[in-house]
Length: 239
Image (cartoon, rainbow, N blue to C red; front, top):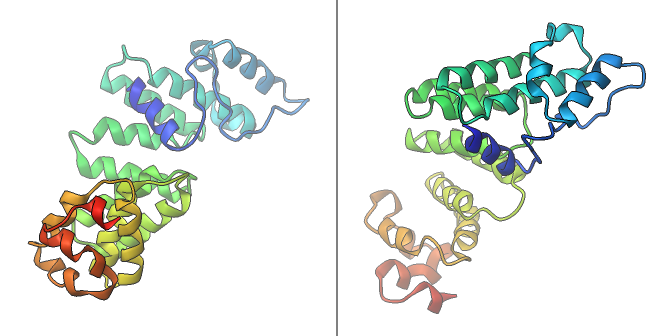
């Protein structure tokens, strides 16, 4: 779980350390908020167990203090010695204090055993409007698998808006969804982006046998890729 939590924070473009808890809201403690200052001091020295052991109900704390407590529970959830049940418990506790990124931890815990439950956590997460592309991508891919292309398109476009940099996997998914919805101009732009780093050439060739893409080789938006689709040239020669 430790690696999964660290990965999800990195993917969201957030700095997260198991030695120093990041303040989720990015707000310092108020001068008069002694409880927050005490919790912050413990967090800065990695004393997460002391924070959680002494934590009262979330309603007792300011937003800033709750952020520290929630991050402390996330830090504990990331310990490699945890059982899955312990990981889940600590993620749920983190949610009590407003650490909504814990939904991602809960997704990873259940993704391999109960896909629908795991996806439900992602739906809860995106309901909080996170500045994180990852849950939108995962839900978008799930909707693609169910052939719910309108829903997939909405989710993946939101992920695109939130993504911090080029994502060839995301662009490849957007190409497919946009094509299937008849938005060929956008699909072409996403295909160009996906192929720009030399990836997905074999996947594109495979589409030639997929009846959903039967006319891709003759559509003007994709004319330059016709030789690649037929296997008569390489991606390098097209580029």
